[in-house]
Length: 348
Image (spheres, rainbow, N blue to C red):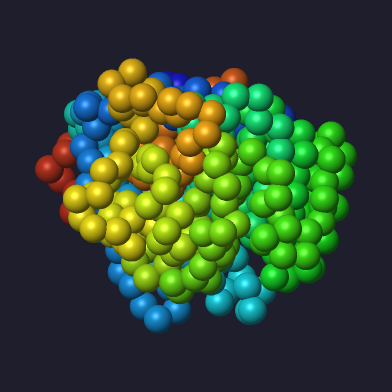
């Protein structure tokens, strides 16, 4: 896209919804997963740091920065579980890409919808490497805002056909079943987490409460499963009993961040884990036998947001789904910012 440097393309929520509908949600999940995988495979190029977090009793506000040396990106995101009681989203977000050479932003985008898409795409991408071959059944514990995206990503990327759903809020399960009724799943409503995991090849936990919780106890989890644990994503928030972790091969995005925010909070700092870039590049094995329990201790990492923003930027010229924002001062000469003000006053 050839643009004046002071004009920045902005993708609004309305643009993002139209983009998803134009491309198709399943196709977009598959294509975004390809971008995420490509960036994992060039992991060493990226700046990496645990996200910068501001915690409060109500939730957390975070910045997630990274750069591949040519493009810089960051996401602003919050997580406030009690928001739903006020009719508000638990998670909201926006993101920015910038040109490293001059520091100018080249994209601003909503990321509330986009984060749901990239989280689901990452989950399913990882499961493609770690889940038992031929997996067709997934238990999903937590049927809130992320659940449909997870289901569709696992359908389109892994081949999941059967969903076993449970949420402590039956209305959430009603919503999830209604939203997914035309997507070709066989859906079973379950009355407990223990019932939901029966016969599942993949178990996804995606709950929202900011607390140490035990969504899965050790006796619920047998061998030959993959656990996609995505609900534990900040200090003081977990979903799995410690004994499950001790029986599992644990895979993470970026170890220093996951030790702060993931299920790894429950384990010693020297407990062995494998980063997914190692699996995707062949440096380390993924699943090595059918009977293993593999666990993706996912907290979300900045490179995934970078990939998602990169994907969106690549769709803009073709779709035109953005608007131009006059974001940057553009004086006649770079050192005459005050003069620009004076000239604006003369025009007024």
